[in-house]
Length: 158
Image 1 (tube, helix red, strand yellow):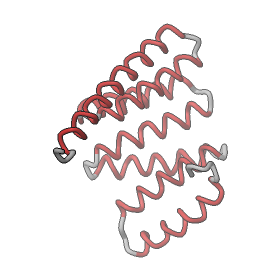
Image 2 (cartoon, helix red, strand yellow):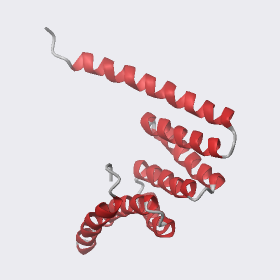
Image 3 (cartoon, helix red, strand yellow):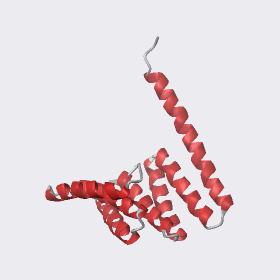
Image 4 (cartoon, helix red, strand yellow):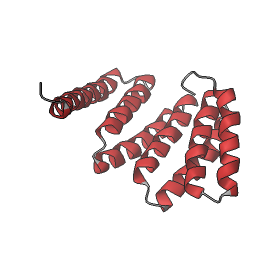
């Protein structure tokens, strides 16, 4: 997927999904379905993507897997962004952002802020989009400082 070879990735994910379905491993099925949904989004098959991603989100929510659930919400937002249904995309991104904040997941907070910035930019509100971008940058800068500090603490003394 990282190489944007979504069609090739789909066959691998479908193989994995079949295995997890045989094992009745619903949680792992949901993870793979989410990846498939993302692939289908980039291939423009948004109805199929939404079907998979909504099923995935429901499984994660029902199991209390909130970290995965927020990603599913953002992925659903991506489908609506792709469809140019910006207000619906914003709604999903906002839900994902709220959940990421509740979980203290700063990296996801920054990602969902960037998604919101993109959606508002498409809506023709560059000032609001820039505000989200600025907040995301501040968070990423803080995370970078914390990582550097942690690396210094973990590094052996010379």
